[in-house]
Length: 448
Image (cartoon, rainbow, N blue to C red):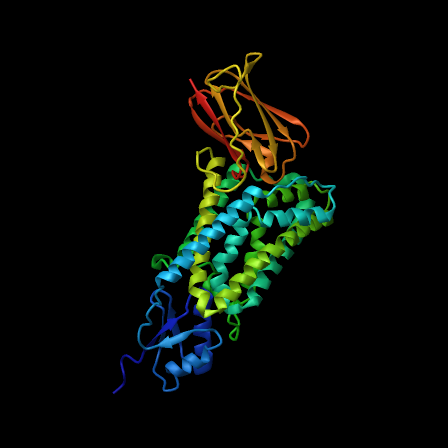
């Protein structure tokens, strides 16, 4: 009598990405000539028919290099003990505080322009890679390290190669099209928030929250099947294209460099500018890659590192969203970036209100790469304001100031010069102003 239910099901340990699913299905099909269907929902592989050659031992031997484990019974998840949990929490806290410290201490003393030597862009990129901009690209590397762990160093090399090549090519394109493309701060803000929400999902996945385990970044299945080689445990094209995509992630330093490439006057100049900048970011980002890959390959640290990285990714994403809420005109705490928190008071007025000169409330502020000084003012409603900002050496996103709730547009700054902006506050409240990326902020309090 013919068996009506010939299917055989095995549970899989180590399944974590869409490419893994396709690799397993193809390898079983090509080795045993049996159709296999992998479910990422319950981590199982189902064979269309029984075959004496296919069992736990043969499958484990077949996928030993990839690190998958097969079993007829459901595999229990490894639980962390109290010491491992403490290690994860303490390590994540130390890294977050170190990141904040570096963000607050980082200072770019000189600006770059279309006439700067290429080495200046390399230094500019190096500073970007240890500033708040690392929250974007560094966060993506941490998010995807688990998925890339099967490909070893090749996947990370492919990612960085895609990043360097795309910056060189697209930098040349920017040099050609000149000033035709301009991203507004508000478009940039929505784009960063969308990327950050995606990063939150990846962070939760790495921490181990089951509801997010199906959350994957990948190309469509039909494209994946064509792109993935049968004997390849991780196709290098996917990290390559993800690396290339980082050109479009709007970091303040990156956008500043892209704007210079736009006015550089030619494709070659624009290409060299962007390539030099990307090359400057490589050492710090490569260190993140090397560390994540090494720890993921070590079973002893794999789970702990995944959770630490997940916490960092979540922190990066929340930081990005907080900053962009400032850009959109909503008040939110500034987690990263310099903060001088100096209050300028009218010495003749104990109320702390700024002085009135020629019928206008006068705000005087210095702007530098380290932030704004002072970054807190107190003014009255209904009285015109003249805000004078002196650029003492801005860079990155600090070279322009926005405050959507107080005035339209932005205050564009020029190194060594004072720029004035006039407006009249209508409603009392505390209004946040910031650089055009929302990373560096200050407050204007309006009172009746």
